[in-house]
Amino acid sequence: MAVVETLGRPAQSRPETPAAQRRWWVAARTKLTPYMFIAPNMALFSVFVFFPLLYAFYVSLREWSLIDTPRYVGLENYERLFSDPQFWQSLRNTLVYSFATVPTSLAIGLVLALALNRDLIARTFLRSLYFLPVVISSVATAVIAAWLFNDNYGVVNMLLRRVGLEPVAWLSSPRWALFSLVIATLWVRVGFCMVVYLAALQSISPTYYDAAEVDGATRFQQFRHITWPLLRPATFLLLILSVIYSFQVFDLIYVMTGGGPGFSTTMVVQYIYQAAFVSSEMGYASAMGVVLFLLILGFTLLQWSVNRRVEDVA
Image (cartoon, rainbow, N blue to C red; front, side, top):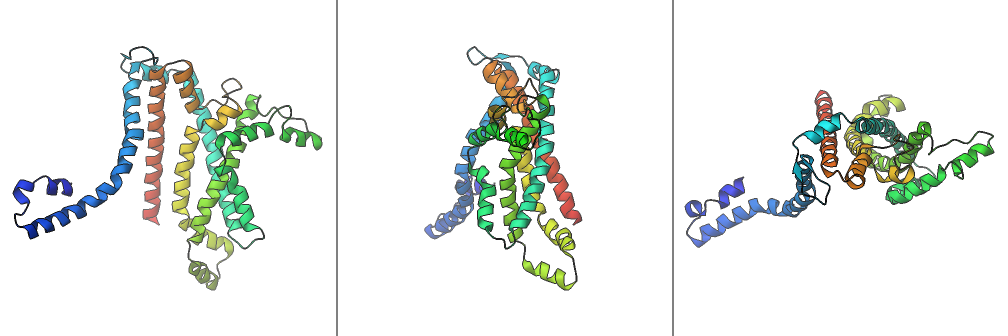
């Protein structure tokens, strides 16, 4: 705003002498420099985020099959969405999937980070091993997981037979399909949580622990009163990222189960995909996309508010 005010009144405020003009330009350039640095990112963000978001809301108010002319229908797509049982089923699947994966991945990632933050044999190798699924393509990971959990020739069922147990229909049973997806997701996400927690642990000054030992604090007391409070920013970051990932998951489930059997593992994003590119209902798919965006935004703001209150109390 200051730049606009500075550059927007050259006729009145711009000095007339050369020395004064140079000082004016130096001051204006200093104020303008930060905006020039963020301008490329803002341009890309506008093209790939802001504009698609606004266009999705525009399309959500219309009936459009991609090949005909969009027809304005007002809020009909939103009314249909709230009375669509398959949308609510996909939202319920997404919430169950999120509740099963988010806290579990954070807990396992924290335990691994605490274990691998100590002097262990092959510590670097173990860190790389746990982080490896993160850098592999999610489609490749899904293909490997589908092979492991295959009902007929999967490795998991083969191991169950070796120990005398009955094989499980991991991918073809509504009872077990979502469970196998949760296991595959944890395999991918635990490595990322571990690395973030490791970075946070290594940023904690050892003087805190030295002082705690002098005061006679146990390991558990050190974790409760030093480690966990200082890991709160990392936990907040992982919580937000994990929830967003869970609400946007698509490729892993599309490759492993295709949303089946039946509708038992269809998530909101996959239902949006089916509405847009299988049923050619772009308006209805956009309406679901807008609702999904509002859900994620609401959850992020809620978590941000709770985190602010906890920090203020601390």
